[in-house]
Length: 219
Image (tube, rainbow, N blue to C red; front, side, top):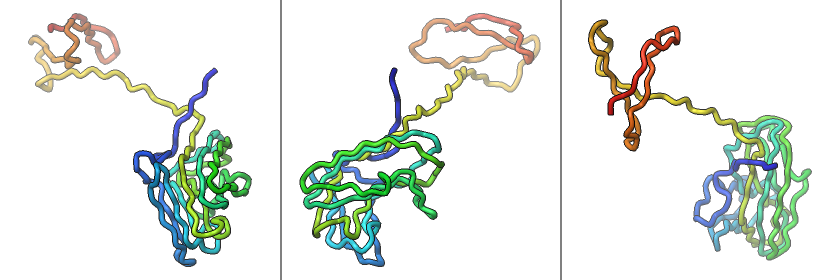
């Protein structure tokens, strides 16, 4: 058997130099000091002051749609220059800020200069058109400062295969008049791919779906 899934994140690594829609969010109230930049193909968050709360420094990706009863795979790889922790949440980006996944409310421990790689599955218990995935690094999570946390890759995949509605075949038939005289010649032009050089079969169908005339086009 085989399985399929599709990626929900617009940016899953930073090798191309593209950061958006990932962005850093800092607590203005607690005057956090941190900045982000690309280094060695990773996105580095340099933290000088991490505030008081673990949500005071965040790296987040918004505009994600979560669907109830869908199964998701969240995975990421990151490292840091000093021992620290990171709390990762997937959930609503507005009140009441419910969380559909958060590693059972447990932050991940990062050992200095070692790569932490995580991959977990979860099933959503509710819908949200305004969800986000966010990495919290504030307060005591940041460890000894200054510290740099380097994000290598992130992914959020929905294991449900999206339903694709087939596009009906529409013939491009063109005429240069609104109607035809009953006893006059009735002509129309069928636009086809330039590579098609053979006559095409046609049927004329009345309002009841009955074929009243047939033939082949003239090339």
